[in-house]
Image (tube, rainbow, N blue to C red):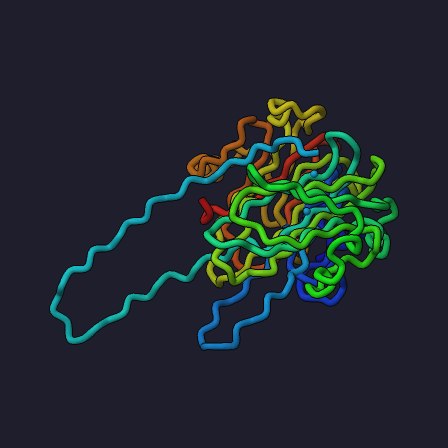
Amino acid sequence: MELFTPDGIATRYLFYVGANTAPETGLSYWSSLCNSTPEVLSSHLVFNVYGTCTAPAPTPTPSPTATATAPTPTPTATASATATPVATATATATPSPGPSSTPSATPAAEPLNLSTRMLVQAGDNVGIGGFIIAGSAPKQLVLRAIGPSLAQSGVSDALADPVLELHGPAGFITIINDNWRATQEAELLATGVAPAHNLESAILATLNPGAYTAIVRGKNNASGIALIEVYDLSQASASRLGNISTRAFVSTGSSVVIAGFILGGHAGNANVILRGIGPSLAGFGVPGALANPILQLRDANGGLLQENDDWEDDPSQAAIITAAGLAPTNSLESAIAATLSPGQYTALLFGLNNGTGVGLVEVYNRAIP
């Protein structure tokens, strides 16, 4: 995936999403970038949708999907959608020449993998990526914090030595990794998505359904551009990734926040809601919140699909967002409701008039309660 400026001009900062042998681009992934200038890269949320097999086939081996570019643990408010009751049809005996089948609706695509590229600083401005595992079965994931190898993509201020933390629900024991070869080298190599640089971090874990937070910080409080990624190694399990979010410092130029996600697993269109949160973070004790966020949704080619400054600007959009229970609490915050076909997408979060501050970009799958 290639990042574009808001006017559609390609920049030298690249994100690639999809199948590839390169460590940063091997699997589908979610990406987001911290920055807030108009001339900044546009963010592409990337997600691949895989069609449903119509004939029996050998069980596929889970294959990590590269995520476009996804921080101390500061609580991040995450709205949860409410499940909509589904009417149950009652069968009525009717004379019929023979049995007839009723076509079933095509299942909607789901978010697969995620990643965020952001400016990692110290204190409250570390990079934070949140995600939910919804369903009834555990899910095996690989999380990565990438820094030094970003220099190969032209990133001059990459984070030299990232440290990765994984926090989970009550009772979950926090997992911390500095250098990936130190603890799970053999296991990570076997997944095919081990980091390319020895100073980068990775965690292989099988997680129960629940809400999790991945935090990336620089060793010894160093700063720089980093990429946090979540790879789904068990996409066939009875659980899925959903409601992904990234909180980071939104700067300017190449340091806006870019959230990428991939829609896959089914062939049907997915209903998603994206939010760009800033002012209301102050109510959670976050200093220096982004005053007026702007949110863009772009496709895999960098094409602008939708843009929003203030979420109430479009009455029809505001009605959908409110009905879903996801209306932002501040009128200056941004939100987009979209029905998307399987594929790769990017969300870009930046500040109005080059404003900077801590912002939160979120992607909600409306099919997940």
